[in-house]
Structures are given as structure tokens and as C-alpha cells.
Length: 417
Ligand code: DDK
Ligand code: ZN
Image 1 (cartoon, rainbow, N blue to C red):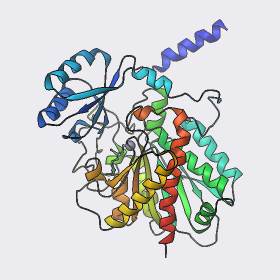
Image 2 (image 1 turned 90 degrees about the horizontal axis):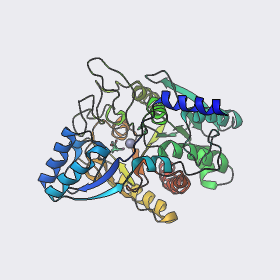
Image 3 (image 1 turned 120 degrees about the vertical axis):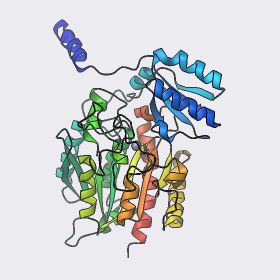
């Protein structure tokens, strides 16, 4: 027993998991330009981890700004906020408590796969193999590429197998590493598809007529890093010459107005656009797959968190896309279906005007490629827990999100021919 305890301590010491004791998440409400400047100055003088928006360049007046700061800087930050007269509140008073608190579905074995827990990549990939082999008539697994650190990027193709090629929906999760509820949703979707096929008439008709490609974790290296080392990592884990900073933002790395707006060319930024479009191998793998299947893919859905938004193109320009009115009305229908279950309120609209301009995103890229029904979800919550959404909220979050996804799928199906 003592030996085991000792080994445990050594293992903890060796893995060097980042702790967040005493660190805070604050919500700031800039209403005049001076406030915006205060936030930018702050981010230049101390390390500020931006939760919303994702980087200081995106801060403007009249939006909520959620930031994570370290304990030693807290007193100074509060003084600065007081002096500027900017309204603010503490969202999370001790980040380590929130990190520990999110794994609140105890009683479920920590190693086994569970739809109501945050599963490790290893667990997810083993489960995907099992899902494919035990549901061979409906599910097949495909490896679409390899990550920077050499992990495989895998998806499941779900749909009744036919001799002719079917139209398809592409659904991905886990572009950003720290948004853990996103991969949880893709797993939930797969479970629902497999378990309600043949019983639920909408799911049956969807999978008879269409295929759904579900990619639970795009940014596999980043996701692993959030389990082993830094819970709040966002980007990929690519190394590049000339900087010690690691990774690029995969949702700024697609070839859509690349790096023109709402993205950073600084490799140390959390919204770094990468050295060129598709410089990140994970992005290239997804883009290659969608290009290859572009004749069949009718909808592109991508799942992020947090903010409770349902967004569609464009984010790289304020111009409205040519299908704006249809995409808006489908988004509003999907949001009201979602709300019908637990009264969770979503805002829908084009990305640039609804949250912030952000070029190089996957939804804009897919849309410009010709995938008309292109949507980005930002799941729960609105900041109470942010990225640290407790496991006890996985089930209600996924249940309500299913209603929105099924609403969009029904519309896509209705407009196939
Ligand atoms: O990547 C972002 O900053 C958020 C998700 Se965390 C989505 C931005 C809107 C859609 C970008 N095309
Ligand atoms: Zn995201």
C-alpha cells in the first residue's frame, strides 16, 4: 500500500499537471473605448487567458469579456478595474475547484467509456472501434489522417449501407481542445443514431436516405494535452521554427479569408492562424476529406463551446451570405426546438455580427466550397462554468442539442432533391 502511494506521488510529480489554485475567471463589461484599452494593456503586461472572446484583438465595446488570470495578479487587476470604472464580476473564484468539480459524475468507473463522462482520447478511440464492429450494418470507421504528434484522426460513417452513394451530413467535434462537451456531444449523437435507428421514425428515415460522418475529436493532440498537462489548452500542438510557442488555432487555419480578420499572426496567440492555410495537418485532413466527398456532403455541422450560439456564415466578412434568410430561419427553428426541452436560450445569426469577426473558420470554408447548410454550435453554458461544464450537464446538454441537430437534418433531407 505504501509503495503504491509512493508510486502515485512520483507519477503525479512526473506528469506535471498544471494546477489553477486561486486563479480567477472574471467577466468584464467594457462600454467605452478606454475600457477596451485597459483590457488590451492588461493583456500586454500580464498573462491573460481569454475565454470569450478568444483573444485581446477581438475585444470591443458592449460585449462581455471573460478572462482567466493568475492569483498573484488578482489584486492589481482589481485595482485597475476599479480605477477605470469598468463593470466586472467574478465568474469563477477558484479555478482549481471548478476543474476538480467538473468531474462530478462519480460512481461511474473512471476508466470505462461513459456517455455522461469526459472520456480520454484512448477511451473514445477504443469505443469507436467497438461501435463499428458491433453495428457493422450501420457503422464503419475510417482513419482520415494523422496529427502532428502522430495520433490517428478517426471518424464513423453512420447510415444504412446501400449500393448507391448517398447524400451526407458531416458533423465534427473537438476542434478546440478545451471545449470538452463538444466531443461528448459527438459520442452522444453516435449512440442516439445507433440506438434509435429502427425505432425513431426521423432517425430511421435520415439514416436510410443519408449518411452522417461523425468526427468526435479533430484536434487529437490538443485534447490529449488537456488531459495530461493543461486543462485549458485550445490550439493544436504543432512546433515551428523561429518560436518556442506551440500550436495554431485550427478554427483560424481554414482557407476562408485566411488571417485577414479576427485572427492573429503571432504564433504565441490563442488565435494564431498558422503559417499558411491548412498548415495544421489536422485541418488539412478534414479539408481533404470534405473536398473528396464534396459531391455528397450537403451539410457541415461543427460543435464548440461555450456561449449558447448557433452561427452560420460569414465570420470572415460582415457581408451576408447568399443563403442568409434560409440559414437564419433554419437556425431559429433549430434553436427553438432546442429550447423546448429545458428552456435553454440560444442566439442565432451570422458569425461576424453575432459574436465577432473570425476569418479562417471551418464553417465559412465549407460554405464557400458549396456546402450550403453550414453551422457552428457553441454549446452550454453562458459562463457560469465556461469550459469547465460539469459532467452532470453532459446529458441535458446533449439531449437538447440533439433536437437542434435533428431539426437541421430534417430540413436538409427535405431539400435534397
Ligand atoms: O472559433 C471561435 O472563436 C468560435 C468557437 Se470557440 C467560433 C467562431 C465563429 C465561427 C467561425 N467561423
Ligand atoms: Zn471552439
